[in-house]
Image 1: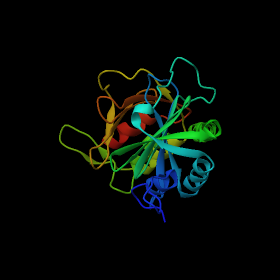
Image 2: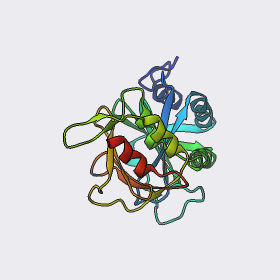
Image 3: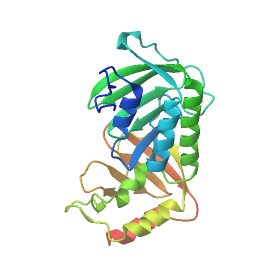
Length: 242
């Protein structure tokens, strides 16, 4: 049986073992796509049944472990036919793929491995990109799921301290009623609006007039999203600050 370190029966690394580790014991994983090499990712969530399908896609390919020095650079000047320059799967481990390079980075407990796909890579990447695009087309990005995360309540950030968002369900429903698109580039400074953070303080979202949402994780991962539709988020958030 393949072990969690990405090795097979004889101790040799196998891609199947690496995948088993990445998806072990998880009900969901993040699927990151990037429409532009200079922009931030659009993150969607994949659930257990979808993850099993993804493992089948990876398993249909042939893989060989290579030295990191062998990894060939990818060319961002060309336009991918699948709508995404890079794909990333993030769960207990991390898998990063580029549309025009068969060299795939796999991180297990922070240790990096490079795998070269010797057959089936084009179909694998196309399938991942199409699944990501389909998820994006459904509406609310996976970024926003933390607003109602079971790990803790969403909090309204204020000068006198954070307090629970009175009705996160109403905010979630309004967000799901809108169609979302990323807006680039993100501003250098956080805009004025109503700010909501998660219980851990790991991320925050600022809701601005006109259904603009600024999502901030750190100085590198911070993005604008534009919502379109009949729902109005900013007045709804203002009501909850009263």
